[in-house]
Image (cartoon, rainbow, N blue to C red; front, side, top):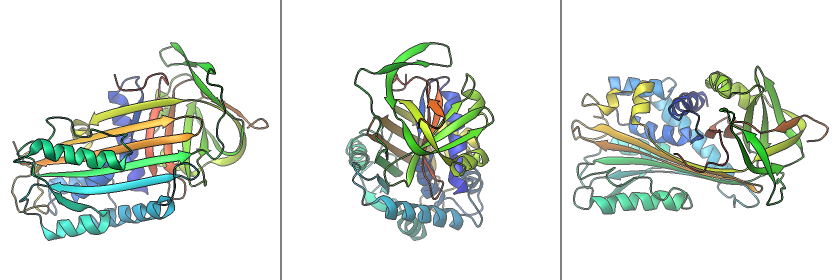
Length: 382
C-alpha cells in the first residue's frame, strides 16, 4: 500500500543519512505498525494526530483508513505465510502487543481498535514496582517471536517506574530461495566500497533463470525470488560508482515503480553473503520527519487513556538480516514507549559494489525490510 511505501522511503533515507557510508537495515513496516497503534490513541483533531498522520502517509478518512488498511495487509500476509516452515516454504510472522501499567485507565475505544485492527492484546505488567521484570518480560516476548534474533529490544534503563504503556511489534522472516545459490566455502571475490577500499567477501553464484530484471536511469535491479514466488528480494545496483545517487531518488513513487516494474529475464547472478544487525532509537528521526509534538509535553493522547499528559518517551527499533546460499532470515522489533511528561543467456548482474535491497511481498507491493550493503564483511553497527 502507498502509505507503507511512503513511510519506508522516508525512514530509510533518514537512517541512511545518519549512518554515513555504513550498512543499513530496517523494517519500516514494523515501525509503522507500532506507530499506527500509538496514533489510535491520539486526540481527534490534535496536532499530535495530524503530525503522525502526515509522517505515516495516512489515507483519508483518518484514522480509520490507516487502521483498516494495515489490518487488511496483515490479514493477507498472515493467510499467505502462516503455514510456511522456513525450510521449503517461506515463513513470515507478525505480532503486536500492548504492555500496560497495572492501572493505566485505558479507553475502551482504544483497546477495541488495537484488538480489532492489530490483534494486540493488553498485557498488564508492573512497571512501577518491578520495572526490570517488566522489561525482561517484554524482551522475552520479542525474542520468542523473532527466533531469538532480537533478544533484547529494550535496553536497561529504557523503561522506568513512570512508564505507562509500551506498544510493540515483531516481524520474523525465514525464506529459502527459489533457486539456491552454490559456492564453495572458500569462494571469495573483491567488493569495492564507495570509499574505494576493496574487501574480499564470500560470493554466492547462480546462474538462475526467469528472474525479475529492470533497468532505470543510473541503476539496474534484479528481483530474487523466494520459494513459492510470493516473496522476493529486489537488489538495486548503481551503474556508476556511488549508491547515493540511487538513494536520492528513493520515494514512494520510485519504490512503487521498482517493485511493480520487473520483467522476467534469464540472469546470471553473483551476490555476496552478508549478516548485519542495526539497533536504532528513532525519536529524533521521527521528530525530524514531522511528528515532534508527540514527544513533548504538548502531546495529546487523550484517546488512549484517562491519564492526562501522556507522551512518547522514545521509539526503539532493531533489525537483523542474514543472507546466505539457502535463503534469507530477517527479524525486526519495534517499541513505542509511552510515559507521562517528564542467468547465462541474459544479463550478468555481479554485485561487487554497494547496493540497495528491499524484501517485499510481490502481490501487495509492501516492503518488509529495506537496507543497503556498503561492506558485506561488517556484521554490526559501529
